[in-house]
Image 1 (cartoon, helix red, strand yellow):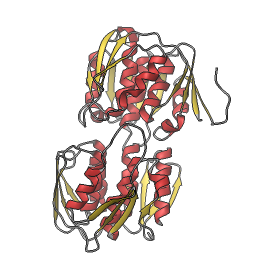
Image 2 (cartoon, rainbow, N blue to C red):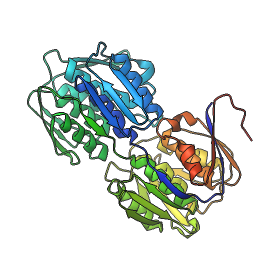
Image 3 (cartoon, one colour):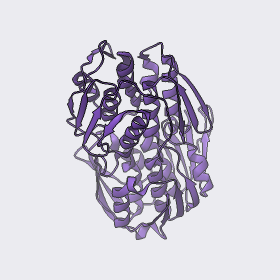
Image 4 (cartoon, rainbow, N blue to C red):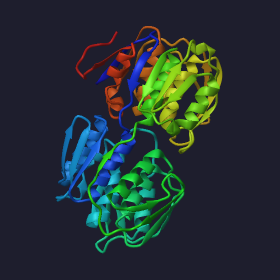
Amino acid sequence: MEKFLIEGGVRLKGEVEVSGAKNAALKLIAAALLAPGRTTLHNVPRIRDVETMLAVLDGLGAETSFEGHTLRVEAGEVDSYTAPYELVRKMRASIVVLGPLVARFGRAEVSAPGGCNLGLRKFNFHLDGLRALGADVELDHGFIRATAPDGLRGAEVLFEYPSVTATENVMMAAVLARGTTIIENGAREPEVVALAEFLNLMGARVQGAGTGRIVIEGVDELNPVEYAVMPDRVEAGTFIMSAAATGGDVTVRNVVPGHLKMEFEKLREMGVDLEPADGSVRVRVEDPEDLSGVDVSTLPFPGFATDLQAQMMVLLTQASGAGIITENVYENRLQVAEELNRMGAGIDLFGGHRALVRGPRRLSGTIVQSPDLRGGAALVMAGLVAQGTTVVDGASHILRGYEGFEEKLSRLGATVAFAGADAAVYP
């Protein structure tokens, strides 16, 4: 099993640059299927989830080439409409090829998605949205099959919950539908706004992205374009909180502060010194014990991001006082607390979706298991502040979403190493 090894006790110092956003890049790659010809994407992170999405597109018959951080997708010839199980089960975001395939080719078959074990994440929002647009959708033996031989038609789509991927899937389907589509209670995340900007550059007519009401006027065709992926706000937040937890002084570059408004508010409430500048944020904490515990509730954007909840949990173990974390998005996302408790965090779980974190706690290095992508990053972060050596098993989760994680941390002074599946590295 792949793993990270961390020697704790070092204050992070220096500068680090954030990569392109995983959650934006994956949807832009899927959207390239909407236009015949070559789409060029810049600032694409070299992470395993991107590799998986490229394998999905290659399996559909598209041609992809990846040099540095520039990705080219040639979607002129697509000869398959089936996204295979072995790929989709690795990454739930693969389901977003459903909308583009149905919109452009009139049919699609996608395995019911897998990915991180964060509990039941309903994909019925995707299916109901496509049905509203006139697609015939069925779930058969673990596969989602959607057909629209006569094309899609505009409709009103009302989401019970502002699902990001469902909003994006319906957006991508609606851009080639006949007539007007109105999405009510759509997701407002910055990645949704970026996708709308990309689609409009291709010739679509999308208005209202970033609000709960998105209006899409269908067009006959789209054209391939060149576009740069936005910075990854979750990676930025991870480095910011890691710097604070270690009592560091770090400048995080390639950041959009407006994408982290609630997170910044909570960090300042704790006492973290944040200095936003043009495209960067400097984080300074003299002593983490001078920070105060705060209560955090995860919510869809612009609320506190669920993808930064585990990292905040680690930071709270180093602050003075108590804080309650309430997870409102994914029911299994607090399972990282069990691994942190093996390090001495003393976190109490109650009510199924709340965690009481008391600090400051002196964490001790040990062997822990990454439960998911963000929980794994949080365990690496815990290893930075722990005494001794921490081994984080299940590094494959972390590599899905963080590019050069150990290299970036090492440049900030941390002692972090990656070991492959066959390495005998346990202390």
